[in-house]
Length: 122
Picture 1 (cartoon, helix red, strand yellow):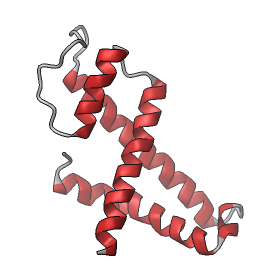
Picture 2 (picture 1 turned 45 degrees about the vertical axis):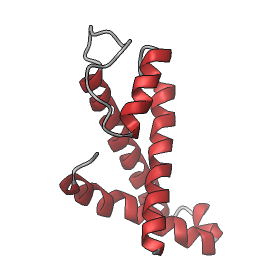
Picture 3 (picture 1 turned 90 degrees about the vertical axis):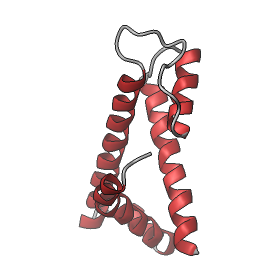
Picture 4 (picture 1 turned 60 degrees about the vertical axis):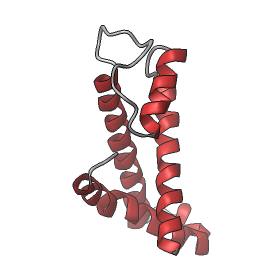
């Protein structure tokens, strides 16, 4: 449920260069191991994308479950899959732990990759 403006700001700067480097590495696997300028840039962009996604998750969690509020049931309707997952995490664990946050970050990147690459191929 990200706005088009927000997506246009994030994807060209972080996600697309990461995917371009990943595609280059599939043809030239040594790129993953040689500490070149591209290698350092790729690592930096992955860190920035992870930080962006985790910040987004923390904001969404705080919006859905304000401090002091019950995590039994969120008063807000679930707008997308992240909301549904967060509702389930709240019911089962009660809080957004670092481990869950890390796993959600990986899952979101998987969804973005699947959606982007499928659309791009068409």
